[in-house]
Structure formats: structure tokens, C-alpha cells
Amino acid sequence: MMFADHISMLPEFLLLCGMFVLLLAARFRQNTTPKTYFTVSKIAVAAALLGTVVFYNQSFMPGWLINDSYTTLFKTLIYIAALASFYLGCKWFLNKNRSSLSFYLTALFSLLLLTLAVSAQNLLVLSACLTAAFVLNACFIRLHPFDEVSRPVLRRYLWGCLAVVLLLAASLLLFRRLGIPYDYAGACTYLEHLHRPGGLHYLAAVLLIVSLLYMLGIAPFHFWYADVLGGSVLPAGTYLTFIPPLAYLAVLVNLLSNVFFPLYGQLRLFLTGCAALSVILGAVGANSETNLRKLFAYVALFNLGIVLMCFSELNDNGLLSGFVCLLVWLLAQFGVYTVFYAFKRKGDYLTETADLAGLAEVRPYIAAAMLIFMVSLLGTPPMLGFLGKLSAINYLIIEGSYAFIGLILAALLLLAYAFLNVIKTIYFDARGGNTFDRADKGVYICLMVNLILVLISILNPRYLMHDAENILSTIL
Image (cartoon, rainbow, N blue to C red; front, side, top):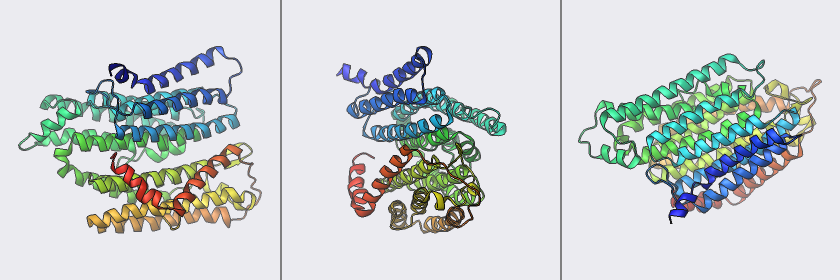
């Protein structure tokens, strides 16, 4: 049994091995290409995924790190999303004829830190992993050629990193001053036995929660989010959009359920307020952008707000509805990012809405895929997004949260207007002299797989609305 507990760290060890092999390949192998680094990273992540599933209930140090069905679920999603983003990222680096070593090395290190944070059962381990992972994101931003990097964006992000460090440090110091244990179980037991929690107890919890909301880009701590996703190179933007939020959400729900639950009656109002504000600002922000990546960063903010709204009640129905909504959003948003890799003109990737004028005339299949994924993100039937929004709204009806339902529907109308501007440009604006490069066949493969999954869920929604929920109910 002891051997099994030790070998449960195999996924993290495999990621470290992947980083080491990348460095060896860069040092000793001649004529390395982006495919070389992608192959090494792909094998490391796939092996880590397999190890995570096999040793899903084994833990090396239960007081510090734990593996169970919950952590395995989120780690599996993280690894699958990483494999998909690595594959598309390789296409970008090949097209640009640039080395991908820094990207894959940073991504593997980030995956290592994020998966450790998901498994963490101690606030010291959690804070160390989250801080390192968030600071590491600056390396993704620096993948952009320095003469094209928005220095204010990078500077703002680094100031944000400092803010996260200070928030986490202040929270840990308050825990120590109040005599609260750092391990999750001990902290929860301590808070449960308090006759009347004081203001400092709530402050310690709020500081830790705010640091997570900041890293997630949840309003009102979202001011860095769209600029970073829009200002990063496409592979980095893809990674940052999907992988870190999955880890942060897993950590947030874990903390609220297993550490701060005795204080949650007062914390819930704060979280629901942040969720509602994210829904509003996500829809409004999308209408203010002409940069496609920033526009869909606000779409991500809108959807994360809905997910947080479902999670905020911390009951079984809310967690299930939020997770279904999260899965549907991931699928549709990843479809949009896949289409981004097909937006090329003379080898340059297009970022502005106006650059897509006449796309439907030249690349009708790419234009149709973009249309399908945008309609899905709006939650319009019969698209898959409708099932996600339906799950969330059905839960809110059960809870009697009619104000939130009205807020979501109003925000969807605003979001529809932003999408209509994109659709108008693609389908109805004059092409003029615009030309569009042929998309890589790998992009078409990803789109086909995504659309097949969407089609299966549309034709038989029972898979998502019943079977998947039954499986998730045994995990969450």
C-alpha cells in the first residue's frame, strides 16, 4: 500500500521528466522543430493523464496532497484541455517558424503547479502552487515578440501578481495569528467550533477567496483578463483561457466546501455579487471590443459568472448545473479558438473583426463553424449551449433566483448584439481585396471532432442532461 501511495505522485514526476527531456532535446538534438517539442510534451501529458486515472484514490501525503474522484475529474479535464491546446499551438509555431521550447516548457511547469494546487490539502502548499503558477503566466505573455508586447499590459499583470502574493500572505498571517491550522480538515474543525466567528476570521477567508477570484478574472477583479488574453500569442491565449480557470474553480469549490463552509452563510452574498457583476460586465465588455480575442475573453467572463452563480449555493444541484454549464462552455469556446487558428492572411493571424470581411465568400466552412459556435455560446436551441444555459436556468428557477435569471437573459441580449456584429462582418460586409489563407488540416480535424461531440449531444441530450449528471452526482 505504501508503494501505491508513493507511486501516486507519478503524474507529477512524468511532467518533470517531460520538462527535462525538452531541455535535453534543445541542448543535444539537432534540427529540432515545434513538432519535436510537441511530441515530447504530448507524451508527458498523456502519461500523466493515465497515471492520474489509474491512481485516482491513492495519496502520497494525505495531510498535504490528496487524490480522490473530485480532484481526478478536474485533473482529467485539465490534461485533456492541455493536449488540445498543445496540438493547436504546434500549428501556430510551425506557421510562424518559431521555436516552441519556451511555450511547452512553461506549460508543463504550469500544469505541474496547477494539478498540485487541485490536490492540495494544506493552505501553505496551495498558496505556494497558486502563486508560482500565476507568476509563471507572465512567461506566456513574454512569448510575444518584445517590440509588439504591450508594456503596460505586462506591467499591469506583474502588479497583479504582486497583489495576489500580498493577499495570500496576508491571509496566511491572519490564519497564524488566529491559531487556525493550515490543513483543510483542521481549519474547518476549528471554524466549526467557534461560538461566534469574528471579523478577522471572515477577513482571512475573504482575502484567500479574493486572490482566487482575481486569478480567475472574475469581476470586479477582471481588469487584466481581456488585455492579457488579447495581447498574448495565440497558443498562450488558448492555454490561459482554458487550463488555469479549471484549476482555480476546482480549488475555489474545494475551499468553500471543506474549509470555509462554517462561514459560508455570510460569504455567499459576496460570491453571488461577483457572479452577477461578471455576467453584466462580460456582456457589456464584449460589445466594446473589436479585437476578437478580447471580445471572447469577455464572453468567457460572462460564462464563468454563470458557473460561479450556480456554484455559489454549494448544494448538489448547483454544483451539477454549474459543472454541466462549464463543460458546454468549454466545448463551444474551444471551438471558437480553433477557428482562430484558421483566420490567416499571408501567414499572419487575424485579430480584428474588420479583418474578417467577406470570410464566408472565400472560406464558407470556417465561417459556418464560427457561426455554429457563437450560436452555441448564446445558448440558442438546438445548439449544445442551450442545454448548458437550460441546466443553469432550471437550477435558478428551483432556487427561486428569478432576479438572476432576468439578469442572464438581459445579458444574453447584449451578447447577441456583439455576435451579430461579427456575423455581419463575416457574411455581409464587402470582401474588397481581403484574402484568406487555407487552414491547416489539423484545424479541420479539431473542428470535426468538436462538431461531432456537439451533434451527439444535440441528437441525444440524455447523455449530458441525465447520464452525465448521474455520474457527476457520485463525484461532486
